[in-house]
Length: 505
Image (cartoon, rainbow, N blue to C red; front, side):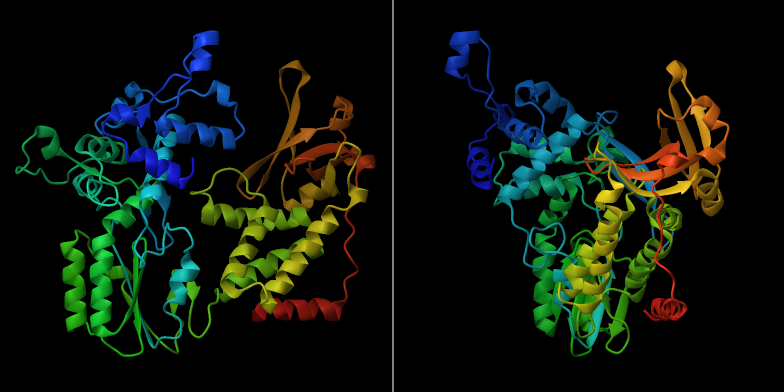
């Protein structure tokens, strides 16, 4: 379903049954007496999503009124949301609340598509908006003498259900009250109040409040909807004082060539009043004024006279490419993986593909600095050179498996400071495990390796491989099947120049 179709169909919704509307398709009734559902709009969106994922549409299981009635009740807590904690860069933890099961997730994704079709965020909202990004946000404040950043505390949980219930009954949504109840019920979670509110009429309302979960697919667009008034008023404040204004989620930025940011000044007082009136609290620990001449940063991007990333960001890419080039892909993995797990392991599960991570970092670098930037061009060229080297035809067998890098068993254990252990399961199934840092890796074992060979490590090798679908895996095989990576001869002067360059960036 495209945007126009969603808008047309949603405009006809008058009841919750209409969200799951069904009609009979005559030819199916005559032939097979089966119902073919044209479900508007939740089920249509769900079906389209499943088809895009490659699933058989004939096996499509639509949402029912029973599903909707259950999931739209925030007091049905068990099958709705689950909570976990992730570490913040600044210290402490952040509570993430995500849908507990796939069915509920898909229903929320469908609601998100409906809201996106109906609503366009304000011109000042840079986050969670098509065509805008951290780069768009940073560009607004480039080259200013003063950049003033504030952060809204507990942004998502600060948005309570009644605000959204009221908002979606207004333009551009114009939802009937019954539909507003359904949508607001789906999108919010129950949370215990710290203090009992005796002004509430019902016991549940006294004990609980219903807040926006951080981790739901529909929460980002809802924050923009709720912040429409805040954006309008803060933009008016900015015009009054001759400032630039933008908001990226809970990150608010003002900038100017002149100084108006005195702690007890008119701008500061009015800013706090407007934010408080909208139900938000400023995080004082993240409030900062950045002056021209120092490093000015907006949503992670250095803005001064031109947009840039931090030196550390470039240095990290350069270092990992250097290790990959000089010492091989598996060594690069062993150096990269522990650091990645320490920084991102609480957010992203599983073992990342180093090549994909570097590719993503280069795409971000391109977005910020441009595709003609000399630093980007040099790093991207080096990256492609290494990818092509490790994907050469002489490393690919007739089954389409590419041996990216191979090392003798004993050398691998020594170089990576690890021990490879072979395990036997029922029905003669075998696999091996070893650790890179604190992360356990699993390796397959080639059929040509006999139980006797397992006891003679000098006869074995381990390879990092890629199959015809691009999937990467570890493989243990006989050493005579090894395609050994041979690095280029090292020129001492060239090496010293490279190291000097690495340290200077």
